[in-house]
Length: 116
Image (cartoon, rainbow, N blue to C red):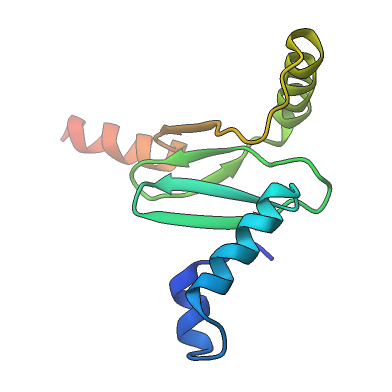
């Protein structure tokens, strides 16, 4: 399950499930840390399975919207979260860590456009 977009789910199965049921189900799955909410654009929410119990982190291209998973950094970020919980006695219920910028392809295109 890469992601679920409410609109797509309802269009594929009209009348099969109410929006309220979808929202409640996704909230429960999020609370159980089985699903993570991805908000790359304020007007859209995407949901991704967190099958290993640990969330994935992304860099998002502001131009082409390509997602780059930050695999090399995920262990460090998850360790930081555990340290925060232990050191400060703080239970992290949710968080968002997303980086926005230009991917290498879009950066090259932008630089080429400026040089013309």
